[in-house]
Image (tube, chains in turn cyan, purple, brown):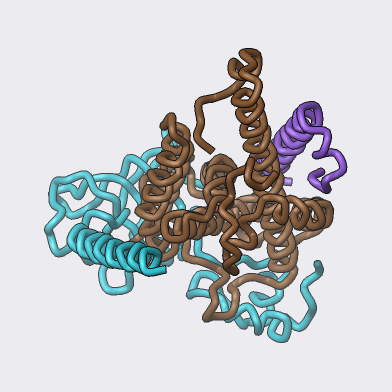
Length: 165
Length: 49
Length: 267
C-alpha cells in the first residue's frame, strides 16, 4: 500500500514538473507558434523583408481582379485596426470573398504592399445550412459581409422557418 | 454534390478503417480461441469463449 | 488455471477485474451489444451526414467530411486519454489487464488519428486551398500520431514484456501534455484551423440538423473504438494463457515441440 502510494506521488510530482516545464516553454516560444501575424503586427514593422504569413479578413469593397494571362487580384487584409494591401497572382480558393478570413504567405514590399505567393481561406467555426443563411439574409438579421452570424440557438426563430433535417 | 471525390474518399476511409480493425480483432480472437481449445479442452466449457 | 496465468489473487477491489476469467466473462457478455450499437449508430450517423444533413451555406457539400473527421479527432484524443489511464494503473497499481489493454489501445488509437489526419487533409484541400499547413493544431495532432506510433514500437521492443509495459506507460504519460495543447491550440495561437464549434461551456455554433448526425456518428465511433479494444484485449488474454499453458507443458514433460513454439517470456 505504501509502495503504491509512493509510486503515485512520484508520478504526480513528475507530472507537475513536466507540465510546468511545457507551459513555460510554450509561453516562451509563443511568438513563433502563431501561424500568421495580423496587419497591425506587420505595420509595426518587426516583420520587414521577411517571408511571413499575414492573416485577417478581406476588407469590404477592396477586391479588384484583373484578367490577362494570369489572374491577378489585389485586396486589403484587415484586423479592424489596420489593413494592408495584398497583391496575388494566381487562383484564389473557392471560399475567398469579401469579409472572409484569409491567410496569405509573402513579403512586405518597400512600398507598403504585401506580395503574396499563396492565399489560403480560413473559415470560422459556424456551420449553417444554406436555407437558414438565405432566410437570415432575406429577413435582414444578418449580413455576411458585415460580421459573424447571430448565435445558432436563435436561427430557427430569426429565420422564421425550421431548418430541414 | 460539390467536391464529391474528397467526400467519397473521406467516407471510404471512415468506414474502412474501423471495419478493418474490427475484422482483424475478430479473426485474431477466433484464432486464439481455437488454439487454446486445441491445447486445453477445459477452455471450451469454461466460459472463456 | 489462475495460477497458470500468473495473476496475483490479492482480492483487493481494483484487482477484481485483473482476474482474466472475470474479464473474459464480463467482456464476452458486453461485446455483442457494443458491436451492434457501434455498427447501428455509425451507420445512422454517417448515412445521415452523407445523404440527409444540409449542405453548409459557404462550404457546400464538403462540410459532410466533418461527420467523419470530427468523431475521428475526438477518438484520437480520448483514446490517448484511455491509454494514459491504463498507464497510471500499470505504473502505480501494476494492474496486469491495464498492461494488456495499453498495448492494444496503441495501434487502434494510431489508426483513428491517421483517419483524422487524412480526412482533415481531404477537407483542407478544397476549403482552405492546402492539403497540409504547419499550424499549431495540425502539428500537435501529428505529434499525437507519432506518440501513438512510439508507444506501439516501445512496448514491443523488449524481450521482457514487463519492461516494455513500464517504458510504454512512461512514454504515454509524458505525451499527455500534448492533449491540452491539441485542445487549446486554436484558442492560444493564431491557427488556420477554426476554433471548436462544440464546447462544454457555450452553445454549439452549428445548426441542429448538423449537430444530431455529428453526435450520433461520434457515439458510434466511440462504441466502435471500445469494441475493437475490448476484442483485442480478449484475444491478448487468451494468447497469454496459451503461452503459459505451453510453457507449463514444456516444463512438465520437457517436450521440445512445445518449447520451440514458445516466445521467451516470463508470465
